[in-house]
Length: 335
Image 1 (spheres, rainbow, N blue to C red):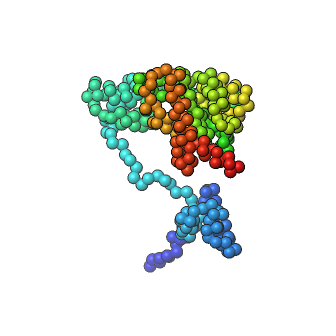
Image 2 (cartoon, rainbow, N blue to C red; image 1 turned 135 degrees about the horizontal axis):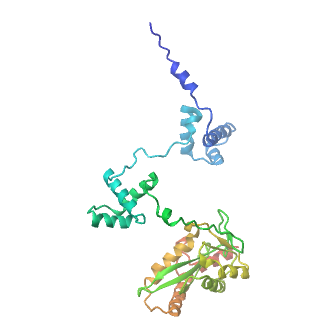
Image 3 (cartoon, rainbow, N blue to C red; image 1 turned 90 degrees about the horizontal axis):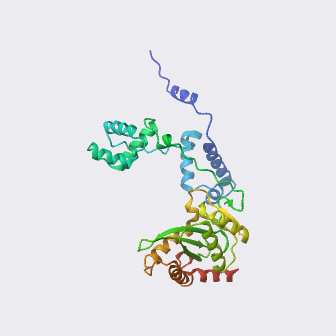
């Protein structure tokens, strides 16, 4: 006669219960316990959630998972989608691309697409070839071009002079602090290309610009002197990206004027967002309507006239629809 023990599966499950938890799960458990203690002492739930820095929805989701599965339920879940996109090409095409690529080590997706279309009458998109090459490279079936030419490893910048790496989370708190300076390339209607340097105050949005023939550190230093004369308030510090135009002469000029110079980390244009947005505004509102020739003096003359309108009359949505200089005047009157 067979006997059925209903609690047997619970004994097995408890035997395999996880005893070591991740730091994420332990932190979530700590927050749940802290909120319970705060509520027991008479604290409102809204205040308790603000104290543990947790949203209401997140708290109830973690509470439910903890009630069902204990601390295991507080572990970080995988964010992998349930349905993963599968390759849309055939295995024959993949092998053929691998064969052609190994015969031509320096061909990228654009050249391979051209070769497949003209020589083998195989029509496939360039992006598909790029995905196939990425898969083959990951599998080790093809070598990257750098394997044959020698990989290029950019040197990490060492700050031994006046410039310093900007501190994480640094923000401007008053006019003249962390003035954002950048340069952009502008192509006129005639086809001529010029380089424009821009400087903007993140607080007041006062904008200073000047066009040059080239983006060199010597021109950047000249632009710094121009900004120093044009701004209605003193420069307290400057932030730039890691471009070579902001080294050498520009760095020495900052040291001469005793302007602290901070350099942004690589690939972080969002930290220079104010001046990047102003570059777009100038291209859309000034250069798209400029048609007075290619002479730099004439360009700068018209540019300064437009900047006078920008700083004194043009409403700025980020400043409660006030022009930058009017906003600066109201800011100064409150201090």
